Length: 139
Image (cartoon, rainbow, N blue to C red; front, top):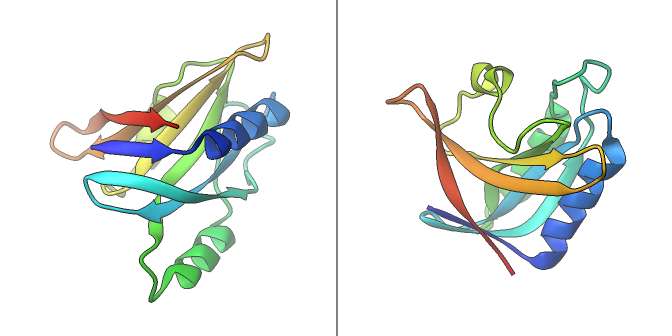
């Protein structure tokens, strides 16, 4: 599986992740495709758990609104993104505990104290009860 992000979408996600520090930022990845996923737009969302270090909860009203917007169109929610301020660009135990939709991509952005960022994409693998890496293509 491949997740394709434009340079603009990638930059917007990284900027949001930096701006939210020390809280986690989050949003939705909307686009098209099945094996090759192309993000056509990103939708920032409030982190309802911004006050809890190391946690995020994407505002469900945003998800529902986007799902409604996508009805009857070729677009769909491909997944979501969130940041790990001071942590790695890989799923945490809390992420795994909250993962229940194996078709969604998790784009995780690590934000270091100096503002440098790294991003990786994953999908839940129900057979292994863990995540598997998704190839991230930016450009």
